[in-house]
Amino acid sequence: MKESDRSFAIQSSSVGYTGGRYISHTAQGAAYHAANILSQVQGKRNNKAKSEITFVIKETTRGSSKKEYPYRAVITKRDKPLTWTVRSGRELKTLKSTHQIQVFSRST
Image 1 (cartoon, rainbow, N blue to C red):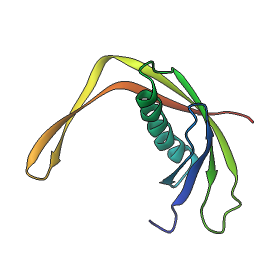
Image 2: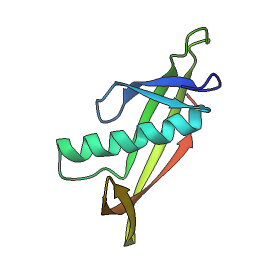
Image 3: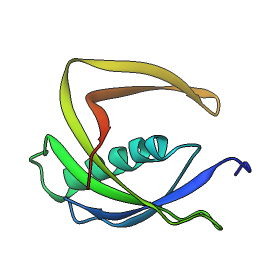
């Protein structure tokens, strides 16, 4: 973790998941990581995906003011899946993304 990085945790969410540790320079960056995890969690709990998730992240960086940041994530299905290839050791793996996640800050 770099000195300029900050850490955040999910304080509450509309899917009932809390906790985790999300490290980013900004609260918005950490919110995107958290939204990605929340969409996976709610997808595993029930097969019907929600198109919107609301959640609050709290800064947990040592010495910070522990401020809370509310967010709303909108999940949409892509018309055509996005695919890319990554190297895993000596083999290549193809990954596919079928949904797009957009994160918006919201007022409390």
